Amino acid sequence: MSINLKTDRMKAKIDNGIGWMIFNNPSRHNALSLEMWQAMGDILEEYNDDKNVRVVIMRGDGGKSFVSGADISEFDNKRSNAEQRKEYGKVAGRGSMWLSKMSKPLIALIEGYCIGGGLATALSADIRFASPDSKFGIPAAKLGLGYEFEGLAKLSRVVGPSRARDIMFSARFFEAAEAKEMGLINFVEPRESIEQSCIEYAERISKNAPLTVAASKMAVNAWENGSVKSEVDLVKFHVDECFNSDDYKEGRAAFKEKRTPLFQGK
Image 1 (cartoon, helix red, strand yellow):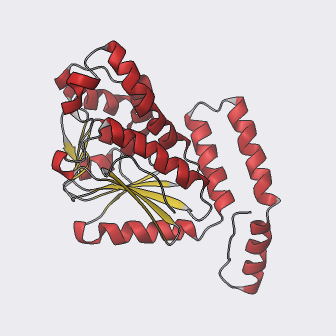
Image 2 (image 1 turned 90 degrees about the vertical axis):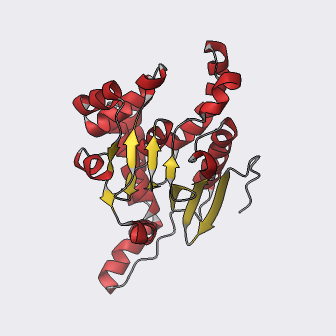
């Protein structure tokens, strides 16, 4: 796989069915620049279309941060007023769109700071792993900036409205234990084993039937979005696809023969 990225602040690689997306701006705690948003969209679009990719893991480089939010150093020349914000939003919006549109399971591997836009990025993941010393928060109220509806709606669905109010009103930071207690994190793993634990979990997913996994993700997303009829109908179509697939035949045959199934995603 070769993705023509216009920045070295994002990395992409495929290993054993896992697509890796790595935020590579450690000197700024992996703060998201505009070019990183552009590359994020390019990487996720490629992975979404690549049949060799069964699951995607995103992480921050350097071990000190997942993503620490937007790169504030760009605010004066790229995001200083409402008009610039619209232009910035067009590029960042494509990256955000692919985070939410990705049909394959998306896992966030979080070490260190996961702040502001970083937390919003992590919330787009289906599953979240974090090291015990990870720190979370949305300091929008300390900067005076507005927070988009979609991000707050997602946060509220994950942790509940009361917790979302606390996070936004106080702008406080909190650690992984509290994040797990409120449902923000699925798994807390020691730093020395978090990468391997995440890989093993991703490999478990990659061995399952891709059509079933995709239909399941679609169904949960449809419920989160309010069970809009068009989305529910699309879920029903993909569920029927599962029952008509070669993978369903393979799953039944493997069960009868007491062997591990080899799913092809068709």
